Amino acid sequence: MKTIIKSLIIAGLATATYAKTPASATAENLINAQRVSNINVANISPSDNIWKNAKSVSVIFYPQTTIKLNDAKANATNKDNKAITAQVSAVYNNSAVAFKISWSDPTQSVQSGNVSDVYPDGFAMQMPVSFSDPKKLPYIGMGSEGRLVLVHLTKATSVHYEPNGNGDVEHQISPHNKNAFGADLKNYNDKVNKLGKNAYTRSFISEGFRSMTELKDGSDKFGMKMTYDAKSKRWTGVVAKQLRDGAADLSKYGALPVSFAIWDGDKYNRGGVKSLSTWLAVKLQGKAGGDALVKELTAKPQGDVKAGQAQVEAMCASCHTLSPTKQAASPFMAPNLNNIGGYSTNAYLAESIKDPNAVVVAGYNRNAHKGFAWYNVDAKTGKRTSTMPAMMSDDKSINDAVAYLKTLKAEVAK
Image (cartoon, rainbow, N blue to C red; front, side, top):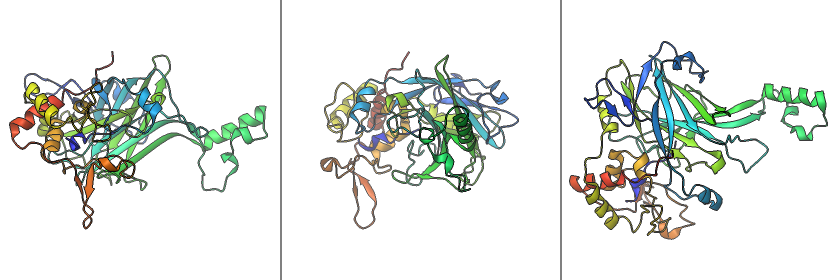
């Protein structure tokens, strides 16, 4: 199953109650967004009064293991990662939606401008630009052809000076290179802090691999912030997104799909090495619509796990790694599936089995691994096609395979 891995990047939610959900009323991957009177998108903060009555739910983030990083130290550090649980709450009004996420991290990792071997803690939120079919959501983290995503990212960074357009180069000099001491040095650092920035917050739009582009025109109206509590050793992040702006119009929906990602700098996390949620349904309480999305993202697999395991092991294990302890295939042959059940939806897995070309995973540098090309390129059209063939076509076989693949996920840390 090659393209079976179309899930990457960046953020999730778990058990919550939905007023229109059938009697079982407790559904995974569902969060209820409480209606509030006002959301300050530009200056969203963890201490805002809007969070006072917002109920949090537990969301599980699974280690992303699709591709092995070309970094032996990082690979060794992240080898036995477990899934982590975060607390997420959501609020909305007629113009915006906001999320608050809190997770445990024993170390505070902050990126500084004067070092190159330290990676920061961070988190991201992702939303589709549009979604009419809940079974065809974008590839998590990177989007896919015809299915654009917006990715909002922030990292923990120290204060750094950026040119202010006034020709001021003095404050770009490192304090270590200043012939200043005592009060003079303090005054200099105070000036740098006043002119500097202490947040890395960016917005991107993407329609598939190698298409991610930073939005710099201000069309995407959003705000993010993250703060660390040294006593409890927890990060709290907040993100607010305007429902209707130049990047997307999400105001017409009664429920939204959202995904989150968390990076742990102390474990050399960056890029595709992170903890990732699946697509989650966010029901806007009191607003009509969105039932089909909620139903799709909270549905349990319908197949036979045992039958699916037999099929997948027979048809897929020669190319894909299915377990962190049983690696029959080369780690470069195809995407690693040992956590695919944690961050992939039922529909994504089914589509990957039946139509591997629907979303083509980029894979490794073809010059570095010539024998393991994950896709081919048509010389005339430039279109990529997966080297994985369609594996199954009948619904029962696909449902069974999906049921098994959904069990492939790391143990949750206690």
